[in-house]
Image 1 (cartoon, rainbow, N blue to C red):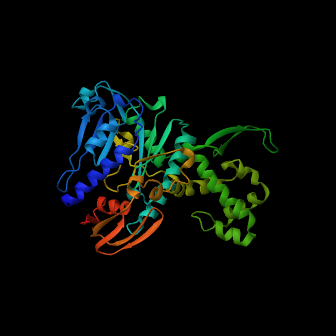
Image 2 (image 1 turned 90 degrees about the horizontal axis):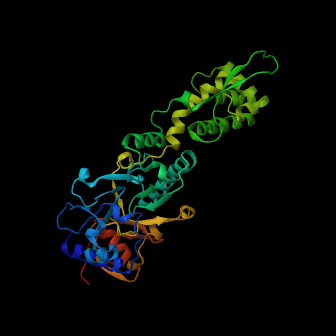
Image 3 (image 1 turned 120 degrees about the vertical axis):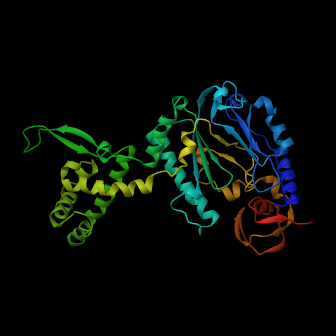
Length: 391
């Protein structure tokens, strides 16, 4: 990045911060603060181990220093400005989840920025399903990271004292790591039915909550489709699964036709074929429903995370809190474009041509000097695809 480009971005970041009201996180004075200044060279200088008292009024600091990136800690400390983690005196920490489109198994380098962000939002909804439905967390804050993904801050009192190992267990759960099928099922003693004189233990997949219910949903959906097929087509489809021969296929089809309530209730003991199918579906269900979070972020009680309301120095977009009921309609390529950069056009020298979708428009950019909306120019310069041109 050329000095003229760096100076322009630093200046315009300062203009943004002078207009912006920043809401700090809870207990901001107990947290460590860090930032990255606009320094010369390919690397970045990370300034950390600051307490809020060290940097002063947050809004004044941002307007004065005009940093490239701004962070605060998940942890709260006795002395957040101490220079070593041991000296800080850890008290407690939020539980942080980071979803990055670059790390999603469903995205490829050929995907557009817009496509990658859409895939990341899908992963966000899966993560929130685990956090809200499976764990029952209530104090959640969802944040667009300003670049390729989303952060979720969990601030429920019950997780504040968890150590790394306990946080690792939560991570493993939402990632679907180490799931044992038998541990996902429930046993229920039944008896008194026709032809059964003694009680017996039936094995059930839960129909509400947890990984077991997700597997049950897949089994139920497939058997509901089988129920609607003619017998020949149904048997052919069932026998496509490993270990399902004609006999098991017939049994499954007959139960779907005559005792579908057993499937609705998740009764794997209705016939051995149902447990076999449920176990076969498990890896696919885990692959489809797990939340591909950046695992080290969630296990780290001292992690620094981006400040909502700040700008991302690698995109020029806003790190933005999103109300829970607004996530579905949130479009990061429109809603995270700072108003500061919507005012006029600037001249840039484009070094990374191609198509860019931003603020509801699609721009086809060619190499060379061009005049573009400022928000697009800032985006291109921040991402290393343009240098500031002479006005």
